[in-house]
Image (tube, rainbow, N blue to C red; front, side, top):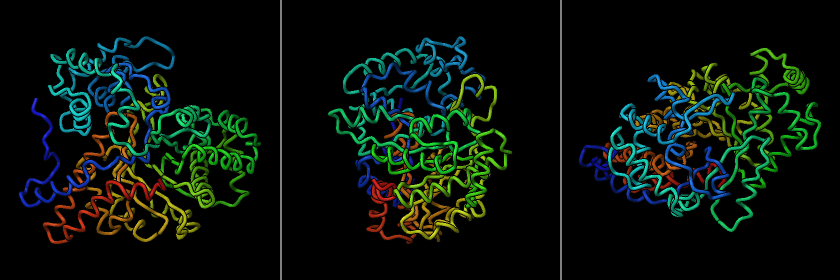
Amino acid sequence: MKGLSPDRLLPTEPKALEIARRLYESVRDLPIISPHGHTDPQWYAENEAFPDPAQLFVIPDHYVLRMLVSQGIDLTELGVQRRDGGLTETDSRKVWQTFAENFHLFRATPSRMWLEHAFQEVFGWTKRLTAETAEEAYDHIAERLVQPDFKPRALFERFNIEVIATTESPLDDLKWHRAIRECDWRGRVVTAYRPDPVVDPEFEGFQQNIEHFGEITGEDTFSWQGYLNAHLARRAYFKSFGATSSDHGHPTARTENLSSAKAQELFQKALKGTCTVDEAEAFRGHMLTEMARMSLDDGLVLQIHPGSHRNHSNPVMDTFGRDKGFDIPTRTDYVKALKPLLDAYGLEKDLSIILFTLDETSYSRELAPLAGAYPTLKLGPAWWFHDSAEGMRRFREMTTETAGFYNTVGFNDDTRAFCSIPARHDVARRVDCAYLASLVTSGRLNEDEAYEVAYDLTYRLAKQAYRL
């Protein structure tokens, strides 16, 4: 197979290409700042070898799963466990063979680029993955996975990761973060506070989650004040393990700034399971404002990840559980939705709110103008369905003219797929350098400024925005 092109994603026009090459060389080897993601802290705590290629690249990757399922392949054929313990494929070689036979489905997708980067740059596999090469590829990768240089901590260091943030529920005891802190390895792995299970009245097991929330904090979480106190306690606990941010995966960007009496009324309805759909949304919206209020006191950066209809397929959710590739983007309003929160705290210079979107139509119409005015707001990078080369380019084109570069926060990979991290950051660096080169050649940016911006987008802005 022809290797990865050294000029991939860079401009084809000769003058712009030369400038982009120089810019890319200046940032290519900078450390990776990964301020938001979903890798498993147990990997770094125990430092055990990854089990096999299928369990590393196929079974946990919802990008891979959704493409294969869309072509009629059942999740059981891909080794995904059923919630009821029913039969599913347990032979990782068979799972890998199915993946390889269908690898052509990923042509021109971001997943193809990430996977081939990992195969070639991490594992040294340079042939094309096909039905015929599947067994050879499996053996090649499996032989390396048992070597010390391919254990999680060694890869963390080889990837040049300066810091990585995982994401945990407030009900998590953070035992793996404690183990990392107490071991003699010095890799920096921090947590982030994701309170959805105890903030979303529609989250499965909400009432039981609130009860457990009280048990682990010693607060009466069935009272409004006790519930808020429990959040404060857990946020402080997460900060003790390095957390610098909270993260909120709400269906919409709606915020509310309700009276205490109204908030208590909705909370009691949530506990009883009697909230209407609108009341559940109002409660989630009010809790974003409460979290902003808490952030002013404890300094956690507030991330809002709205606009996904999560677990869209009821049959898949019922059979296999969450996060199996059936989260679907929705239209998202920000101007009206964020107004209650921004009226309360939008001009607070000590509050940092990072906004994400799955609705690209909102970039130039809503998000860039909001971030270009309110000092609390910054724009998160192209996210999830749009963290492709094209999506990253569109993000820059539609936000820079109104928000500039410095109301954005660089790049974060937001991934569970550990070996894709260097690939994702490399794509972002190449796309940004290509965009900056186009600004230089069209006379909109001086080349010396482009070097500064490239460094900032690659490294400084993420550290600054996430207070790392």
